[in-house]
Amino acid sequence: MATLIKHVRIVNAHGSQEGDLLVRDGVFAKVGGSIAPCEGDDVIDGSGLCALPGLVDIHVHLRDPGQTRKEDILTGCEAAKAGGVTSLFCMPNTMPAVDTPDIVAYIKEKAATTGVKVYPITAITHGITGDGCCDYAALQAAGAAALSDDGRPVENDEMLLNALCEGQRLGLPVTCHCEDLKQAAGGKVHEAVAETLGVKGISSSSEYGDIDRTVRLAERVGAPVHICHVSTKESIDIIRQAKARGVKVTCETAPHYFVYTCEKVLSRDADYRMNPPLREEADRLAVIQGLLDGTIDAIATDHAPHTPEEKANFTAAPNGVVGMETSLAATFTFLRGKLSLEDIVKVMSYNPANIMGIEGGIIETGRTADFVLFDPEQTWTVNPERLHGKSRNAVFKGETLTGQVKATYCSGKLVFHV
Ligand code: DOR
Ligand code: ZN
Image (cartoon, rainbow, N blue to C red; front, side):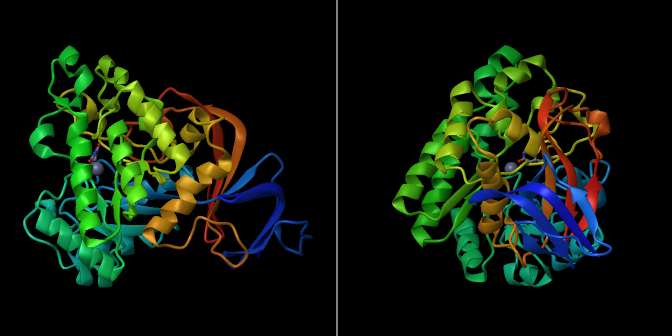
């Protein structure tokens, strides 16, 4: 059986068209124009809707194995589908960390039934401790799709250089959480609001100083590197300059960094605490500028579930916010008039697929039919109790957003609808 969506706006990174979309045997069978239905086709009226390539979220914490009170692979994938995410890369800072082929196999097996394409990122160093490099070829053979010590920087230059070189040799992207731990240790919020709140601050330089080091190491060996969650104006300047020098650097930000500033944490609500933290207005504007001029290649969520109990105490709470169910609508709502829907597809689907070297990010005849039906007019209010993931630490809670994911299709199969 085939699915025929009539009168839909088909949006790709490099242009849109009005027309029909036919999906058969898990792939886009025909894209655009007027398509007559065949006997037995499931015909959907797509009037007023946009068909977008499924989102590719390259920074997700699924917490499985080991912290399944926060999230597990199945609930994380439900959240993904509700947010229009059809491919995701999960970070290895689980318990234990994803640093052996067995754990990679566990993730792949558990994810196999979800419909979502789950790509495991494996640790750069054993247990994400900085204590020696993992066996990347063995991890890749088990299904590792990229390397990261996310949650922590790789402090040792030799180890980071080894990962960059080995990653390049094996074709495994290396994604770096950049942070100077000597500066940032014990920090709770951005430095500008730390004194008011009576807690230790996290300086901008703890982020951009380590981005500078990371980019220079990549430059030295001519290897590609991807920088996670950039949040400061200086970070963006460093990456812009590195790109201009020809360094193979890409980077991502997350929606909260272009929507909010550190003013939000003055409420002492830990649902606005993440690492890196919400910064200042000049940083927020620089993030938007970075998206506009292409310095920032991707929007990822850094979906980081924590339980309500863990988030109850402002200073004791762990860092992180959930975001997969709100990322598209939040980006559409807050960047309207700046980024077109085509631009949004580029930074949330097309570019992330390219950075990670996977299929996806494009609606084209013959390609796997991972896509979203998005209603750009529908407004809705974010209610953490109605999220599909396990945790409730939604950074956009209470916001009324414009634009809603009406349906998500993975390999041609309807996996979510409102
Ligand atoms: O806010 C964050 N949460 N930043 C990180 O680097 C780690 C993540 C997590 O695992 O909760
Ligand atoms: Zn991180």
